[in-house]
Image (cartoon, rainbow, N blue to C red; front, top):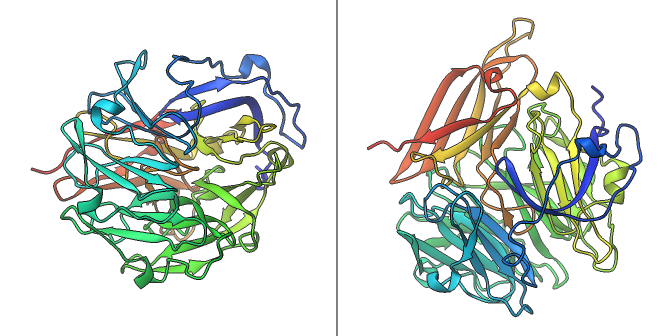
Length: 476
């Protein structure tokens, strides 16, 4: 297949949130014929069929951010929704009553009905006790952290030291220092410095961004960080950061064996001020290297050009197709294999009055679609509570025709938030280089201490077109 970016088709205009193998979304009236080779509308009988669900509950004005997670550990996904500062609505936690048929707002009962300019929310288990805690970023007040105490929440912002008063927009939880527990990077706007809050393991956090040189001092009030994407872009087994910015975008490359990051501008197109808002890593061509979609925003322009970068051995090449330039994003990006064909599809949301919410189906095709593995990481009860777990895949054996039997290792993270102020519940997707036969999988997470689960010499081809579910049992 050609290596240029011509394999996506626009299927529908959608207001979407990807959640596992399902979608919660609303169809709108936009259609477009599409332009460019191999980029066209999918016929109606191939288009996904979606409808609104529980309209009366999910129609409150001012909703802006959301996060999916099983906060009550009952086996179904609950939904946290944050609102804008000028909304008359407070933030809400919709508890799933079972099977997704009915959601009830429990925010006031649980002490989560805060109001403000809400940005990134994240369900994560920061203290390793097995249940999901809740972090909420704000642009107009200190960020908040709520500890889950068997289904109720306690505000631990002050005692944890994580209440950054700067104007936060993006935030991502990941294990920055390799000790197993989750640390927090916050992307701050309006010239404020960024933060990296290390989890000290005792319920408290320390901001070490300045000491590590990743706080970006000296920016003007019109500059700042907005969205954060976490991924192993250089295939060295650790997690790096891409920061979408008002100002130059950049990568903080993790130095693996020590706590430290090096600033990279990896590829043409990162320099300059693109007014970037959101970004998400995904291996759209299943070649084993994470590619990158970056969305931009200018308030007076409906379709400011976005950027799709193909990763070529750690160097990003701009390959945005014309159709995505015509119908792109401003405040929302999500990759997921909605049609279960082995490659990831792309949903983008544009909040301009003339903007559209569009779903692009990836037309990668065989045999490349078979070069992939999608892993659903669950707790020992089969519940979605392991956000932030790191999944590492390495090549165990290669086809005999591959000379030299090269080494290959790459890592992914179970989503903790991104794509602009949202958190999904989707499988971890690996594209796998041609020639790899058997793989090793290692899952690392924090539950009553650092935990490691390993699967060796695994035939990933058995799960073509399916999801591999892994239940994590902490050692006793």
